[in-house]
Image (tube, rainbow, N blue to C red; front, top):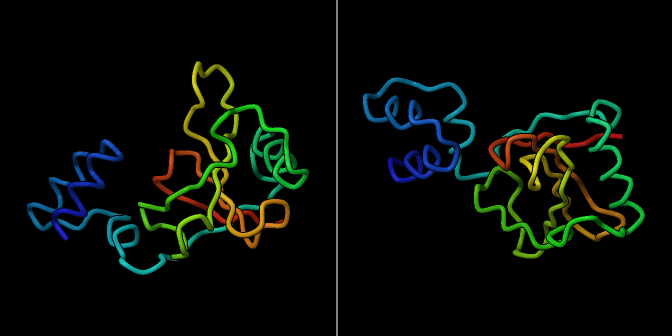
Length: 135
C-alpha cells in the first residue's frame, strides 16, 4: 500500500498524499484512487466538456484525422483508475489546451472499437482522475 501511495504522490506531485499516508492521516480521494479494483467514476455530459473536448470527441467518432501523432495510441491504464481490460483496449486522444506549448494535460481515453467505443473518459489532469462522457 505504501509503495502505491508513494507512486501516486510522485505521479501527481501531491507530496501531502505521501505525508498523510506516512502519519496515518486520511487524505481525501486516496482510498478511491488506490483501490485495486475499478473505482467508481463520475460522469460528465458531452455538452459540459470544453469546446476542444467536444471537437476531439467528434474526431474520434469520425475516425480522424487527428492533429497529434500520439492520438489513437494505446493507453495502458497503469493508474488502474479505469475499468480493467486487456492491454490495447484503451486508446488516448489529446484535447487541445489553449495557450499550451505542448499537448497539455487534457485527454479523452476511449475503450473498445475506435469509431464506436464502448465508453470514453475525460481527464483534465493528465490521468489523475477520469469522468465518463455521456451523450
